[in-house]
Image (cartoon, rainbow, N blue to C red; front, top):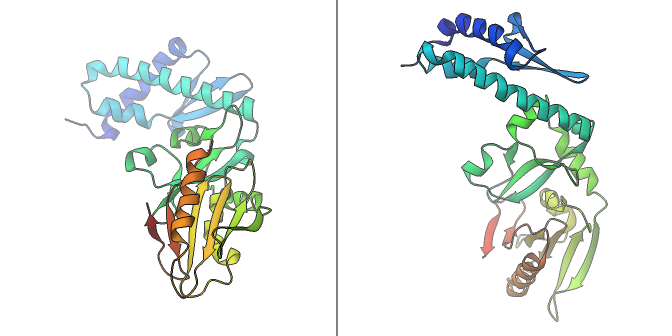
Length: 265
């Protein structure tokens, strides 16, 4: 049966202080903040003991020394990794971007720094580095002290603000508007600005897709219907299938002030 955290904290913190010199020499316990401070090179980072307290509260007291020892090793290893990130990447905040991806499952989204981006997409915060980058996990963000990340959205939009916009033939009578930035991984964030790219779209709306992370496709629909849907969907699916950095093979219907609808597939 779980014990209240307050009942175990004194004894667990005593174990932390007792075991630190042997498990992670140089680390210290800061009692006022209930954090262990791990020094690594010229850096140091504090880690809350809350996880150790929770684990001990669920187990008999006889198991606490091993639980605390394992937690110290685990926390210390994670601090070493986070400081390695700082050494390798410098100011990580400057490398953060928002990458729009097809809607993730709850299990996929859970460990990531991710936010919903409408019914069909999620926005995942990533570290934009060719070798050491990738999706930012909640644990990595915590260790790196990354909070208040609203600036990431603005910075990503600024990065793709110079995307090229051009019309290309789609059928004998219709064209497709291509918004692209070769080499970029973030063009799909511009789907929040569709109205700016198809100002001619009326109540019928526009077809929309993001087959790759460097390209967004748009087609303002005529009042008469969706004659270009088949061709538009085919181009989207072909671009998605042939891309080294695919986003979504789906085609959507966009209308001002209305929820986006998936048309194909």
